[in-house]
Length: 338
Image 1 (spheres, rainbow, N blue to C red):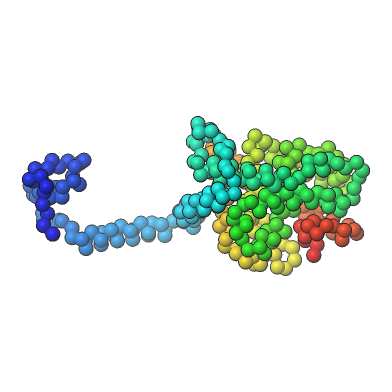
Image 2: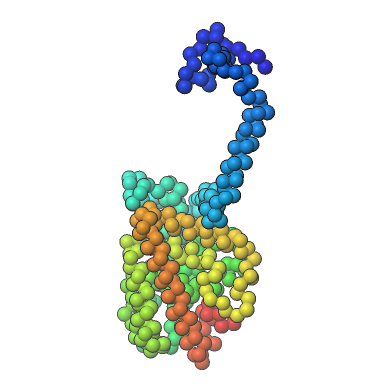
């Protein structure tokens, strides 16, 4: 179509006004001897845009798999966060856990971040409220190993209550929920103990563990626990780690022949695990900066692997115990004695 100027072809064309009048802009170009064949048709504009997109896609394809994963995940993360906030808002009335002033190493957490972390804190407290604190130190005589675990099953139940308030966990198929609990809880329960015992070890536990297993076992358990004292001022780190580790499909060593490849929605579990890993990482960056965040991740992973080895020793002891058939149903399942 023919171009016209609304202001008698007298528009001032500069960097700020050049898009306000196409007619005057072209007129100025022709006045300085620009060739008419340099003007792109609509088809040429579309072709130019297509070439640009093709080049950008080629650059993305040339990236490493890890880089590509991060690019794709950034989009998934934003969408996932919106879904999580929407879901968790239906269950909790959030109260901000951080002030709006600068708090932490780098910058404020966003409102969405604050709500998500606050909901995790609230969910954990709901689970912890199922524990009668008096039961933690009620032993007046030396129980057997099986009796001890039967009494302690309430601690395991409280952690399961916490997980039931995680929206992604509830959305999984029930069989996947059960399998994640069955495979991972017995290893990660020790992080839960650290929190509910406020980073203090119960005084009698060393005597019992030395009796049931050996002194070295108790020493290594205590040593492993102490590494987490690093987070005593930031217990939310451990709560986030509890979520990340729950969705770790290969956390526990194989038991039997069908541990792997039996999850119904394995891809969904991987995605949830990746999402909460990113949340944990971003929170660590927020608190400490990158260098200390890396150290924190190393500590969590290394000590969980130590817990895993110690739990293997404990399981061997349990299986050698003649009265393991007296386990209650939950503990029998967690030790996978079926």
